[in-house]
Image (cartoon, rainbow, N blue to C red; front, side, top):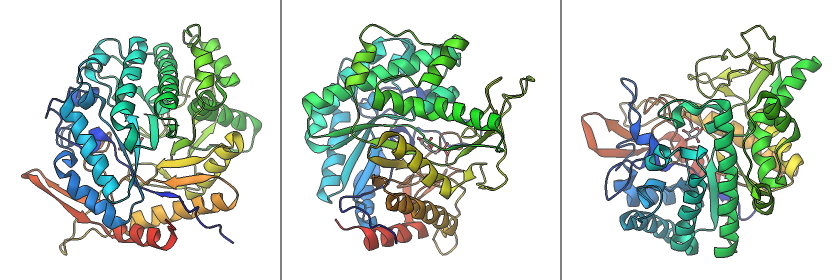
Length: 462
Ligand code: BGP
């Protein structure tokens, strides 16, 4: 017998600012690191994206038609603070203020990510996350967000996929890719920044809730030999547990700290950092889930680092620690991402059993090349299959006792993929973005739109 969804379940969908908004240099917005990328030939850039900035009312009306109870989006830091700190751009404030009003008009609960991969360029040029001044800048930015939008937002997410930024740093560092020592310093500084924002929210908006949103997945051993199991545990701790352990328990995961010190990657921790972190326990755990990983024990032969395939979601190994392995039991998407609905249940149960905290699925979805057919529709039955299979496993996890408070698939609308531009789409809504017509950007409901609408209608009680 499956358990019903809780009454106030957040039936949502997600996007992020730089991938959906466009208007990259309009109305006083500053540059973010994402505006500096020159995409490869044939790949859409982020400058126009889905032009949500100019289609906001139309898009929110579509969310209402879809029946969304919640919408997860991110605020562009550089739209609010063009230089990352200092002067506030009022036009940027007004855009998000209008968006929030529009959402409330249809009783859609906003879930706001404060920072989703788009560090203001000025901060990057000042040393980025390695420089502790960026912690102060984030706190200043958080104060403005809570002051200006606090009365309209009940759910905040601090940082999107901090673990992906540390483990796949190329897209987040337009200049030289930092070494691991530098990356773990960035990581520590982000932990301190999130803690400061959390404590500030407690003071300024005591009724609001806040949590992190890392990409969390179960890691499987390739075979049942103990050394594969150990490698899987290590990689799961380094890739996943570290990011929740810091938030929930206020400390570095012991095996990860021992790995960091042994390799000489340990960050400099200032007096007071860990006390601050320990005080800033989140209210819930955001979780992005796409695919699981499978690893085997290292061979120490100079080839442990080889990626399993070329896609950025698929991990590369680490010499002497673990190596990426194939999983013959799972299908892959066109882009090499493993499809593992049961893995979502495994992941949710591991997280819940470890932390006993409410979990919000902040991303989950299928990225592929959709086709607009001659009947003017997008028949994305493959996406319906992917989402309904994952969704069933989420319901089984609830039935097992996991406190799942919401589900926000990626994405509400087609947006620019981090690496494959518009070739790889995720939305319930198709954006007809042809290069000769960048003005109209017509919105077309995919078959998955009708499927999700029905799912919400049948299950939502609010
Ligand atoms: C997550 C990111 C999103 C999104 C998604 C799909 O890692 O939080 O920003 O892009 O993955 O990834 P991609 O766009 O690379 O297909």
